[in-house]
Length: 316
Image (cartoon, one colour):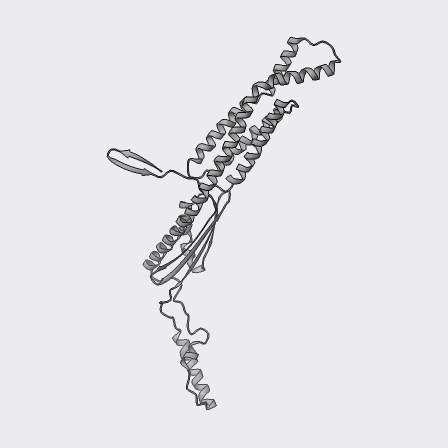
């Protein structure tokens, strides 16, 4: 977080942060006698994939609820569960016509059998269908339905905000780990850069030894040998790969300081970094200590890149 000044006013600017795609939140709220429960779960996914689980009577609100999710979340597999029911203080819905039918049937049976027991109203109310327990699932008036829809949206936004706190916390943890691995890659790359200058004479010695074996001791033209060694060194030079790798590392670190849909961009950069590491390996297959050292560093770089790719899969 940083503070900026505009004239005589101070404005606090929240530093953008990356988000994990893993999060969970559950919310219980009340609205006009209704109990609304919302649970939101998010896991990693290449795109935004939303699954809404709710009663059939709530389907008229599905599009507006999906829109809320699209506004707040860019990537991830999102599962939302809605449960809506009347609160404990809600009036009981009694099917009076059915209760009357049960009563008349019981009276007729009593008269036929000559039973002396009085009819038990409580027992009759326990018969199937007499007590609905819940009022109609949705408000009946259009104005009430609209207000109810806004209440669902408000509860969903609150639940998503709670889940977002978890996603931000996990994102901060991931960013720390990613920066640590970037530091390791940078250190390996700079060490390899320091060895580049020593590779040219190493390649010359390697070339000379191979040519002597092939020519069976025939004298070699020093100029020709120097020319061939220079060509081999040029084909084996990894300076450009190291420079591009440095640029990718800088871009990666800069993206981590941003916000929004970072995962795809970071993954693309890691693909480019992986390509540079593979090229470094293909250019330094030598047996001398300098080439072997660069090969070892390239392998370490490639290993760290693979670990980065695993972690980046969970960033939005």
